Length: 462
Image (cartoon, rainbow, N blue to C red; front, side):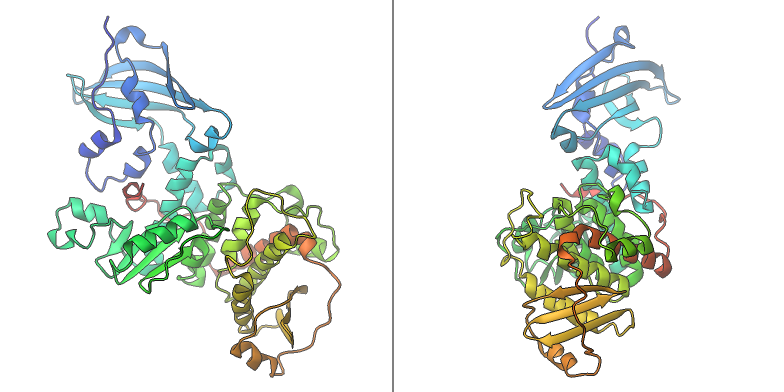
């Protein structure tokens, strides 16, 4: 018997057969469509393994059953399993799932879905619910992209209120909006607010430069910071923000709700928590002050997290601990005498004006006015900051009018150095600060799973 192919198996065909606002579109886009288009669906290959190679990814597909659905159309149950080696494992989504394909009697594609809950939907539910460790086994770049877009969409609604998908508006034939949305931002409110994104900081700035002036306010969000020189968008209509800085636009409850997910994305879908750096805030605090931290090496994921975290807004004790710990880790990585960072990233201190950012951080810390946080500015660029008994010290911090004013008040109480060097223990300090922030966030408000609808037209961005 000749091979039986199903015609036009593609995501584009799926979109043409479904409503523009279909809730599953974002999940369907991740399917390996070309594989299903190459399969033989004739009855004589039922339960026979078919092998398909797509670049570095290998697929084994088995058509397990063919039956006529209630609407009289042919249905096929296909088990699909994929394998990839080395770096390709991160670049490709892993599949080991049973799919159902529906076609017309003449062999034209209609739809495709998984028999059980879509694995991408399950992953998104776990991600938004904070069950991050459960996702590490299925980590991949396509999944990371879905979660990144979804986090932006959910947080943007919490921050800005209801927004529309620009491309969906165009598809619905809104002529008045066609010009406003010709650049297809991810989310938008007419020409008032545009939300765009790019995974890396450098590309986010390029996106800002390309679309500057197209809307009154454009926010471009990135996940991974860039540590080398690159073009920066300085247009007054554009704000290029890290995930952390983007969440700063919301309330303390919004920041608490999404911080863990943002960190997980920055770390390539890894929690990054090793056994010696896990514990309650009290346990980590005791081990830190006793100098019992067992790892000094700084990982690239921690470096990315620290650079993003340095832009975090400080309005609580936990946020002060976290941002100061990020600054301490960056300082440690830049300290060539310590040899704590040996990763692939090239560190150029002047690129991200570390000390200038640190000056802004200290200004926010002194505004807290709480007994759990003390700041001492003795002058000549030296600054001490103590949070829950953990003392940070920084040299060559640029002065400012606000810091000069603080230095002349009675709140600027003298501190002597504790003798505990935090830079050699930078990862442990960051782990303790995360614990402070996590325990604090539980008091601010629940970060449990929100109702899961479709990610806000996540398929509109490539």
